[in-house]
Length: 239
Ligand SMILES: [Zn+2]
Image 1 (tube, rainbow, N blue to C red):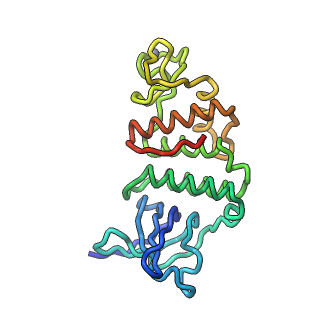
Image 2 (cartoon, rainbow, N blue to C red):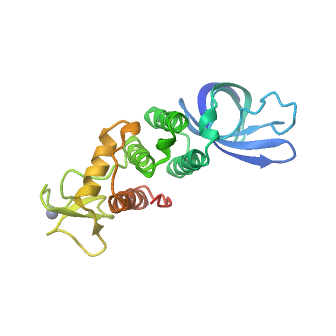
Image 3 (cartoon, rainbow, N blue to C red):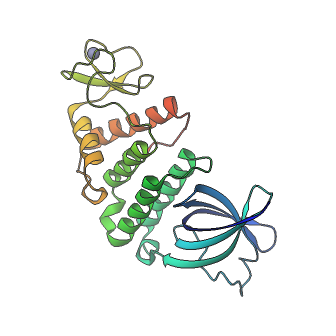
């Protein structure tokens, strides 16, 4: 069985393969994550030009055969994010976005909100040097959690339902706990972390609220712990 598919896609990772080929991990609007091979892409006269690079957003045609990898047959650039590529901090942030997405999604499943978030964060990193601040990176992760159905419970204590005196975060329960319900293994999650994380989820990425280092550290830990316990995904802390 073979099949031709057209999709908008963002290149997240590229690896050399053989003499002139590359294997790419891409995230597509229509199909979610796809592994693909680009034949001859590393030849100087490749028809792909320099477009099959990480953080290019492309219109892509792929051919699917019996193998695990699709074959990329043509690409058109939608955005190359050239300003992003000119700044080391923006590249670093974009690389962390790519790593995070590849950890979070390991198979093919359409998730258009996730695709839009990836495109948004790259556009923002391209447009604004300040988008490489940690607040935006954490806001992106928090929104991706929401988009993939692993959002932490932040509204009330996961054990008793109280909305008062919420002081800690429970990794096994995936949410905040009040002082009375706090157990060994729960970690401090203060008011500023709470304000940051709920604010970051509610606001557009570009308007991620500023926060003190401790609030960012606690928010980062809440995201990492939620993923580890509920999605079986281990990501590196950002903060
Ligand atoms: Zn409680």
